[in-house]
Image (cartoon, rainbow, N blue to C red; front, side, top):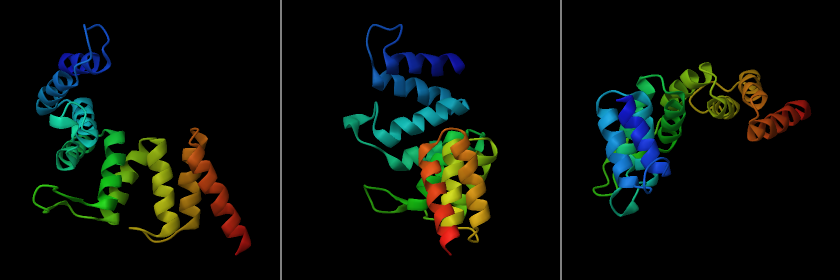
Length: 173
């Protein structure tokens, strides 16, 4: 499974193969993901999210959510962060309009906590913003500052800016 995942990466990037082949890369990621390979699930979800290797180059958000969810359950922090972002928006199937993923700030927070606890900088920043807004959690400037600071400490410039704005707001109140 790892070999299939690695082959998919090579095909996607054109490294060690004659040419980039996103459709073949997608097929490799899918086989590895179906076999339970967490990083392949995450990569497959990314391909579906952005339409890479998909028919017509069209994104498929329901499939992206399915595979990000599977990768998130296997502890892939980036997939947990992505699932949180998808939960904040909710997803409808473009073909029939049915709700594929219900909008839920509370579920987004659950995913972000897991990713933030694993040290994922973007998730820490995103969780900090939810605490600042009180979306899916009880509003808490101290928790917002904690998570924004953790993210900023890892070089997340956006978190640093958000932290500065938060400090200013708290100081002015």
